Image 1 (cartoon, rainbow, N blue to C red):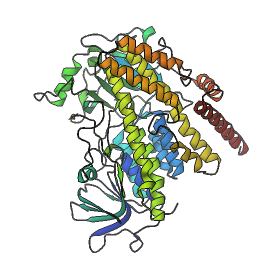
Image 2: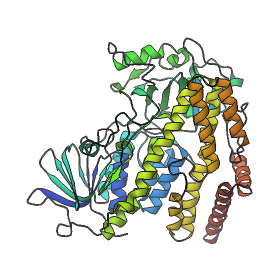
Image 3: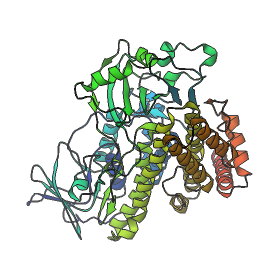
Image 4: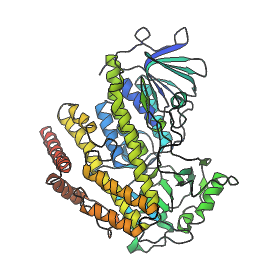
Amino acid sequence: MTAKSVNAANPDNTVNPDNTVNCDVVILGSGLAGSTLAAVLARAGLSVVLVDAASHPRFAVGESTIPPLMAWLKLLAVRYQVPEINALTSVDKSTEQIGTSFGVKRHFGFMLHRPGQEPDPRESNQYVIPDMLTSASHLFRQDCDYYMFQVAAQYGVQTRQNWRARDVDLDDDGVTVVGHSGEVLRGRYLVDASGFRSPLAEKLDLREQPARFKHHSRSMFTHMVGVRPFDDVSWHPADQRPKARWHEGTMHHLFERGWFWIIPFDNYGPSRNRLCSVGVTLDERLYPKNPDLTPEQEFYSLLEQYPAVARQFEGAAKAREWVSTDRLQYSSRQTVGPRWCLMSHAAGFIDPLYSRGLCNTFELLNSLAWRLIAACRDDDFSAERFEFVEKLEQGLLDYNDDLVNCSFISFSHFRLWDAVFRVWGLITTPNTMRITTALGHYNLHDRDESYLLKLEDSPYTGMFWPDSPHLQKILDVMVEVCEKYEIGELSGDEAADRLFSTVAASPVTTPFGWDDPAKRFIYPGPRDMIKYLRWAATSDVPELRTLGRETVRGMVSSALKRKKFL
């Protein structure tokens, strides 16, 4: 694609005599989202200025990836012809192309804890990501963010670091951003990817007060050295441990209305990174901040209640200062408007549980980028063109709010948590497959955009598998029973029984063991995936049958195409 630039009189984007730089798109925030979007737009021929109040390299949270995120990254790399994005799609590629600072994520691990007690090994769960599906990793954000920032610059994006936006002004023809130095940026469109302290959200008074979300949590976090693997400090017998070591994935230590995370970067052979990302999120209504304690003191006072977790931190030391937040959740009444978009974390945030932040970000980036490229080409920035972006962004936040809120409610009762875990787990495979299959057909059919546009043509926009009314039914039951348990209308066992029954009876529950309470550790291997594809392709459920058949067809076509060129 080639976009028409408003800067034709100044093709090098140099500063004009009146101290104004003209461009197609101004992006506030050069984190992973802003830098990747800038690279995509510049690769398509747009003139882009990318600014940030801080500078690289720098600390960032959002370090644990999930399979659908990897699928979106692969799609972005191909659709927008920015192959450098592929460096983020596996720990092997990140290590080869960026550096030896990344960790592996073989699984999602969960262990329930109670104050003053050793955890019961029967109150744990683990989901190992099928190799046949995709992979995941622990992203060392200061390195991968800086990498994508450099990629953006290599594609011709003008960059500004330590550049603070002093004022933002919108009009019918574009946007004007004034920097602290007096430099003026004039663009046809503004994307604010700066996060919570969004200048645009503040300027337009977009924040909902209070946030509309049901979930409540605050957080404390840092990077540490010397954090011990949970496998080394757990007193559980070998026959009650999962097949995959806890240290090989993201560890979630659950407790009532909260959870600790352990994200190691040293669990991959070539890694030379000794750091471990650690933190805790907890309901601020149940655990209000203690003003007499520093964040580090508060973290350790909480840690003392959970002896098995505390053993992981014996001899550990912080490698950067602790950060302590107030309530994490914030929302915006509007995320897209005339010539502007609040992108992802500038629009709202739920909680790091399930690591959905980056996945939501890049799904949104995919839908925004092609519309923005076309708008610049056509000089048509009509609101109708971007309506879906708003719908998607708000939907992603609202569905995630339901899932995380139900999870926090369930942490006080293992059987109910176990049922919620299964709802989350059965989503992952179809969510990843629909993206991967669309990309496969796009490649096989000479970059036919219709296959990618189908990803946006779904009845439940923002849901993890947005094509399935059966999944919507499961989610509805999950929300109902968890909220009734929260207010005492159902006991924990009654709520769990009903949710387990709903999962077991659903025709879209994958045959991996999600419907079997006795199977707490889920390890889908190649045979399981083949069984799943056969089951899906012959299902009576239209959206499942289509997904299964399209995946099989894509795999066969790809194999034949490879054979043709051998």
